[in-house]
Length: 84
Image (cartoon, rainbow, N blue to C red; front, side, top):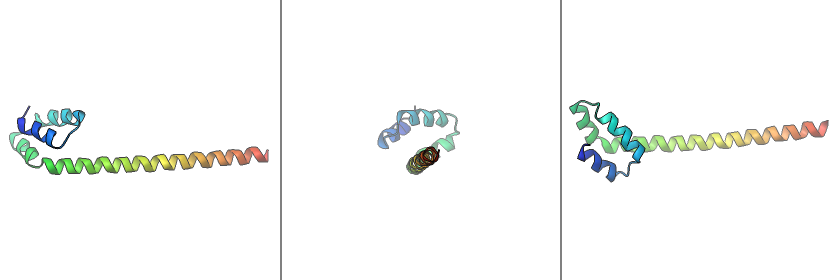
């Protein structure tokens, strides 16, 4: 593996799964693209972290929406049961 890439993985505390995926892509790139990836690695990490945070927020929103819908369905079921 490229030692610069490995150093960046360590510096930015990249997860093992992400390291593997980035390494796989890295070896498919042309030399120019490899150099660009190394030079722009901080930008890549920042973007990936932002995307991960956005995903976490969306997951939380979906969970709370689902809980709200379940509560509403339970309330309706209780009302229907009470009316019957």
